[in-house]
Figure 1 (cartoon, rainbow, N blue to C red):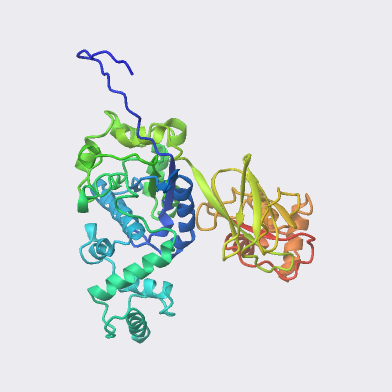
Figure 2: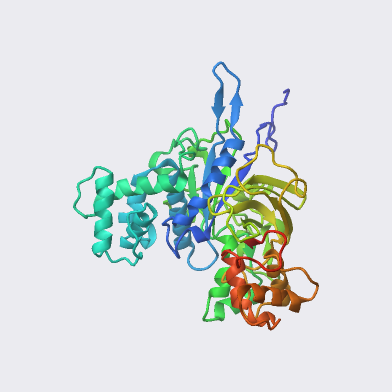
Length: 488
């Protein structure tokens, strides 16, 4: 390119903006309250992160051919409740825990266990959870290392060639961390600190450019002043925590293969540093942006809720930081038998997803903007080599509502709204009639309870069967097709 010399108020530098090409979100539910310990249920989502990395990996022709993975950077975020410094540390600890899990760094988890930032101390309960996930313990994770827990420790030590003494010392803990990390991530997801990260571990233990905690500085949702005051004044904070859920997140951002950054020039502070450096990167009106105003604001709609200029630049043109949800639709046959390994095709919002249900019989539909419906069609296993289009060659088919509130999650308190009841019944296959009473009675018939036709009489059972995705009544009395159960 031919460029002219710059004057005092001009620039002649041309560079590509650092824009994520893909992203993966770890939800708040993968951690205990105010904790950085990674819960076992994260295991269900890890194959999708592996798929995402593989899809963005560049293959360069050889000989020999070379695979260049997309470098990633991990950002932790908290909700705007509490102290800025505390929330930065909490979000940083969670980002560190995810990083260490992906690269199998037991030393980072040992730091979180023994020298935690912000008082987030792991203990016996976390040991028990890991032992249970690895099949060595059957009892509850109550934090009490009783005889069953000590026997489980001995079982683990014997299986890993350690001294069998029932003492969970540093050597046993590190072996336990690594075994647990392997179990959560699976064999496809072991990342390298240099090859797979944006700053290539050039900052060493500081991890500048590879991992950062953004605290509460970049909320996706900011309440209105009125709502913020109301939620803060109530003794029960359940609703506030529920509404703030989109703000509590760990974002894994994937950049173009070959992109690298110099950590010395990276604009975010180190994950273990305080919040003061973050504020130097704020917009001039950063505090106003993240503060409640007259109306509720969402970042994807108004673009003015992030206080950090740097994170705003990254997010503006990226596929990340949108109010998207993932759904699991559990698949059964007409006799109520679960169908793991079932091929499926689902269409929602003009986008078609194909795949195979997991070991739980769940068809996973990711990154869906709600409200939405989904036409899903599926077959019994074994998986065929060719997956036909929905409605053409599948044995089962169902239209599913994907915007049903989740019990004890996004559902408002009080009686179940009629619209939500209709959607749940539809998703379970009880939509034979336009008359709600008839559909309720069909559900009651299959459940073996009195047929009153009143929605209020089946609320708890309907929530359990739909939201917890338990097996449907067997055999169903009213269906010619399969019953599906949807859960957000």
